Every structure is written in C-alpha cells, then in structure tokens.
Amino acid sequence: MSKKENTNKFKASWTYDKAPESTDHIQIKKQYELFIDGKFVKPVKGKYFDTTNPSNDKKIARVAEATKEDVNKAVKAARNAFKNWSTLDGKERGKYVFRIARLIQERAREFAVIESLDGGKPIRESRDIDIPLAANHFFYYAGWADKLEYAFPNKKPKPIGVAGQIIPWNFPLLMAAWKLAPALATGNTVVLKPAETTPLTALRLAEIIQQSGLPDGVVNIVTGAGETGASIVNHPDVDKIAFTGSTGVGKYIQKATAGTGKKLTLELGGKGANIIFEDAAIDQAVEGIINAIFFNQGHVCCAGSRLFVQESVADLVIRKLKHRIDTLIIGDPLDKNTDIGAINSKKQLQTIKNYITIGLNEGAEIYQPKCTLPKFGNWCAPTLFMNVSQSHRIVQEEIFGPVLAIQTFRTIDEVIEKANNTPYGLSAGVWTDKGSKIFYLTQKLNAGVVWANTFNKFDATSPFGGYKESGFGREGGLHGLYPYVKFD
Ligand code: NAI
Ligand code: MG
Image (cartoon, rainbow, N blue to C red; front, side, top):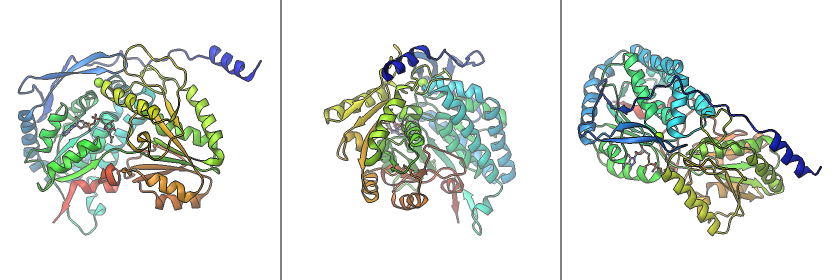
C-alpha cells in the first residue's frame, strides 16, 4: 500500500464520533432587559434586537437596545453608587469581587455553553480558557483591592469615577472580566456594553452580580450596537473610557474624547509575527503556529497571523503545517472534539472572504484542507497563504479569521525588520532553542507581548496591551490597575 493510500485508509476508518456538550441545564430567556441600578429594566424606547447562534443561524433571544436615555439612566446610577463604593474599605470591596469570581466558577459550565452558543467558539476553548480565565481575573484583582497602597507605594491612589467600558465579541465574558475586575477593585463604578452579537454571557454575569449583593448601580450593563457605545463615549458624566475592538472605532473614540478630560485606554487590532528559527523544536513550533492562528477561528487581536519561517526549514515546516491542518476538525462549536468553530457573524465572514479573494488576486498561493463545511451558519476553512511579501494587503491588514500569511527569512536582522514593518504592535512569538536569541528579539520586536516557544498564553497577573495602532494602556497584572486610579 502506498503512503497516500495508507493515510486515506486511516482517515476513513478513524473518524470521530459526535461528542456534543449537553445544553439541558441551560436556561436562556426569550428576552433580556438592561441591567441598571441593580435591576433588569425595559429600554425606554422599547427597542430590541436578536442575538443568533452563528453555527446554525437560529435566533437565541431578543435583547434590549439601549438608547441615549437608557445610557443616561445607567451613568446616573453609576454616579450615585460611586459615593459609597469609592469610600468603602478596600477589604470589603475585595470580598464582593471575590464573590463574583466564586460564582463564575460555580456556574462555569453554564457560562461556557452560552459563550459557545452565542458566539460560535469551540466548547473546548470556552470551557478551558475563556471562563476559567475570567474567574481568574476577578480572583486576582480581588486580591489587590485592600493592597493598593502596596501597588503604589508612597502615593495615594484614588478611583477615577464612572468608567464606560465597551467590549468586543471575540472573548465576551473574558473581556468583561478584564474590564470590570480592576475597575471594581480600585473603587470605580461602571457602565459596560457587550458586543451586539454576543451579549448573553455579560447578561448572565449581571445575574451573578445581583446574587453577589454588589451594591446597586456599581455595575450597569447596557446592550446595543455602535450607537449605544457612542452614547457612553460621549456622555459628559463618564470619567474614563476603556475600549477593546477595531482600530477604526478606536480612532473615533480617541477623537471623541480628546480635550474632554476623559481618561482613555484602547486595545485594538494586531498582526502578530510568529517567528520560527531553524534551531526550533519543529513539531512543537508547528503546534504553536496552529494555536497562534486558528485559536478562536483567528478572531484574536494578538493572533500570530504573519508567519516567518527561516528559509532552511521552510519546506519542512510548511509540509508539516499542511498535514496538520488537514486533521483539524471544523464544525459544531458544542462538540468537544471541535478545533475550529463558527465565524462570529455574517459580516465578519464576508470580511474574511474578501481578504481571501484579495490574497488570490494579489497572486498568493493558497492551501485549504478538503473539508465539508456545515450547511447553515458561518464557516471558513483554515487557510494558508504562501508566496506573499510585505506589500501584500493580507500581510499588512488584520483579517481576524483563520487565515495565515507565510513568509520566509534568512537572518535575524531581516526578520526583525519584517516583523516590525506593520502599523500594529500587539504580539509576537519566537521559536528557537537559543535563549540568547529570545532575549535579543524580545528587545527588538515592537510588540506589547512577545511569547517564547509558546503562543496565546494569558494570565491575570501578566500585563497585555499594544503599541502604535494596536492601542495604549495595559490590562492585567499590576499595570492593569493604573488606568483606574488617579493621584493627587
Ligand atoms: P467594532 O470595533 O465595531 O466592535 C467592538 C465594540 O465596539 C462593539 O461592542 C461595538 O458595538 C462597539 N462600537 C462600534 N462602533 C462604536 C462607536 N462608534 N462607539 C462606541 N462603540 C462602538 O468591531 P467589529 O466591526 O465588530 O469588527 C471589525 C474588525 O475589528 C474585525 O474584523 C477585527 O479586525 C477588529 N476587531 C478587533 C478586536 C480586538 O480584540 N482587538 C475585537 C473585535 C474586532
Ligand atoms: Mg450571537
């Protein structure tokens, strides 16, 4: 039997059985209201929008659309709550934050299923990464609440006031945790807006916040799309804006807040360089490349979407990479074996498809595995582009999908120059056996995070954020406290 026949036989006889996560225990309401001043309230104008399941196009629930009037109410509630919350003993504040962390942990399975239903990410990721990390952030910042004087020795940190927080759809609960936990620990009150395609876990979090006994108005959650977000940004009584999302909207927010005295942090797009040297452990590096670009369907601001392989091992790495993506399982996000779930929205799928067409028109060589994509919902096969150069749009622009642009290099100086040649500066990865090379590159690469012999690793204790068009400000770790305090 030839090698090829052997491989085909193996594939035919070793298919995976279905392993769906049960949804029996999940109760999703038909309609969700806004969470303002500790209560679920109807939107003033009575408008609602649908959130769907991107893996089958089915509607999951109707969600309230907050208008300016609702945002006004939310900001007012947050302002009223600020007086007591900001003067509460840090130890007491910490207890509430800790309680929220515990409640997320207790209901982790429920959160994971809802995250995958509403956003399309594989249950393996929401179960093992998103939800545990979200709890972890609350635990971590709960610990800081009564130790702020140690975080900022000889200074007197004070909370800023009302924080407006706008988050995206790629890590819905986790981004809510990144924003809420440090704000609460430092004594601020919050108006949070989840993304319009993935509001359900934030609304479940609102239920937990109610259960935790957190004083009314300390956290308010308003749902809606860009206009709702803009109402928060432009509200005169908001003291700070924290935004994660597209560079375009980030620029708009920066303009809108300029000169208003509002504090601002922006966590925007990226085009991370993943660099493989010839002395790297190649099989591990191939797994790292897969994780860097196909994790969460590539809907990751710090994705390793530009691969740089040293020329001497390029053929080997690309061959192994093609082989590996042939085995990725694409399909039902709730199946425990799924590697790549659904693309979050029709709009995002269209963006990705446009970029694939652009890549082909620019003359790049494409590789996609032969896989059957589900009939309904939004799907995109994992895609490799070879023979690309720095001037290709698929190398310069953020695609935010499972699409990898592969280039080769010969020398360290060459790869540093290529890696830094982008408007972004969020993440990078270096794969090599030599510690000295790692340290040299971490100094030279213009990126907020540089991973060595790993990729897409996150931890609550570790700061995250970017340079240039990837934004400014840090989230996570001690650094994540800064955006929420001021000093006299
Ligand atoms: P987006 O930036 O429009 O959405 C992010 C959040 O901002 C959502 O909650 C949205 O409702 C809100 N928003 C939209 N317009 C606003 C405005 N004028 N004022 C205040 N808030 C506003 O991102 P979109 O359109 O969903 O995705 C487009 C591209 O953005 C993606 O293809 C990707 O390249 C990038 N992106 C980057 C993310 C990151 O984590 N850095 C997350 C999401 C998208
Ligand atoms: Mg949805």
